[in-house]
Length: 383
Image (cartoon, rainbow, N blue to C red; front, side, top):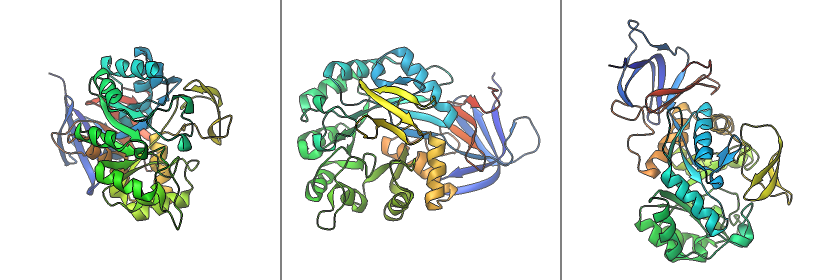
């Protein structure tokens, strides 16, 4: 019988509580117990560290030189393996606006994927485009944008093995698909959208429950037309994704969203592309050349092309911009995403839940990442 893994003398952080001097006992892929620290017995000494639910990245295109749209098994394994170093234990492989053939290849590749030990959980797909607005394309190639189609979406959902868990759509281009996807249980997120406030509110009524990368590529807020930004900030039941790299959003605008939405409705994401974790230079995103520098990832036009943000850095930046508590950081980096995705055994540390955990120091440097009860990353190199 395999010995349990014990994290000793650690501070356990959930969205609704912080408890110091705990032992977290892991048996198999589950948390067996969270108890007061017992000095007896063996385990990993985590004194001075914080144990948070593993980060869940709902919007990420790639990392370590690979991308969802590569549509190869090797790329997905490399992708999933790279994320554990930043504390991410689960993610949605995110597509982008491309040819139908390229999108279908990526979806089929995810459908066939089998996770290896030491890799983050690939939960499913975030379909970003091609059902978006040409007025808010950003780095999404305009030539591949299509009007929303229930027929095409049905085909793609089947090709993915029913693994499309989130869809970014410009609802003003086709409200019927919003309703259809909601009925399938898909998270419908308004993004790359030029909708008016009236149209955005109608979309919420019809099933939109999230806003894709808040502020970026959505109709801006104006005092005579609140746009998409104003609507998603004011709608109480709508979550907002945020890329907190201080490139996509100014720190004070991060704080504005935090004050308006509260930690209950913010989901931290990276929207990272294949250059994450690699040197500055030239990279590809959907057949477009991206120049990656300390100022971010940009197309030749100057448009931002995703990010190179790591999740633990996003969490640290959120704390810096807002003064958010450890409990609130756990909520925004994991619990809210798990709730949106309907993952009742993730995003919260308690007996019986999945043992997907990240151990960080006070500066949010990752010390250990545990996926499915196994150490997938250790800052010392030990596993």
